[in-house]
Figure 1 (cartoon, rainbow, N blue to C red):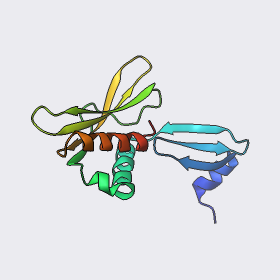
Figure 2 (cartoon, rainbow, N blue to C red; figure 1 turned 90 degrees about the vertical axis):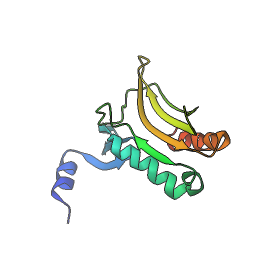
Figure 3 (cartoon, helix red, strand yellow; figure 1 turned 135 degrees about the vertical axis):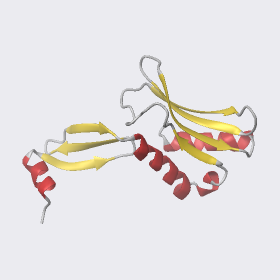
Figure 4 (cartoon, rainbow, N blue to C red; figure 1 turned 180 degrees about the horizontal axis):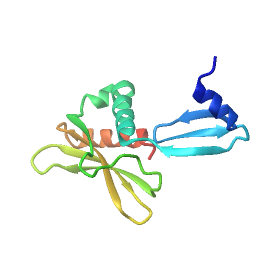
Length: 137
């Protein structure tokens, strides 16, 4: 038996609902994408964290922490961006920090995630490359 929301979707011509790492949307019977919405920052954060833990545990074990930007009152992953930047920098007192930012079409930078490692530059590069793959950069 179909749920009420499934019945409503079918009556509106929605064939299927898709959830991807950064966006979710419906597909109509005419194969058009409709109702496209950005995933929440929390959803994308847990996607990154869980993918690191499950698919790349050897990389995850080198991460001293993985954090999400909670300072800018961000709620959703922006769909209107030009680039996603994943890069590392040397910490001011120790270790390396891996940043995940979006750069908008107007060159505004939005900082989303920060990872830290104390295992040196080569490990920071490996983490950076792995995170870039996960974030589809």
